[in-house]
Length: 85
Image (cartoon, rainbow, N blue to C red; front, side, top):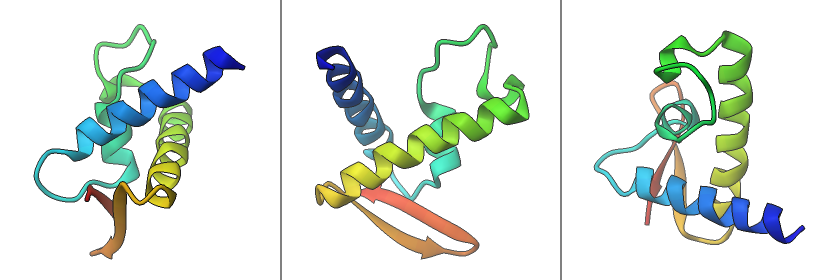
């Protein structure tokens, strides 16, 4: 359980650092910038199913950070996007 909690905190910090840049990012854009333990050279080369799983994990961290009041979410153009407060 402690290892899982540490992993979650590390990932949340990574998401915050990704959102620290300028502009708003979608969950997919956040997932594409996260570090993954995969053998592919880039997120673009991930199989489609793996991109779905990665985006789902990014969404979980984004939702957590939003509830903590550390990021905000707005509907921009065609999807929800996030930025650091």
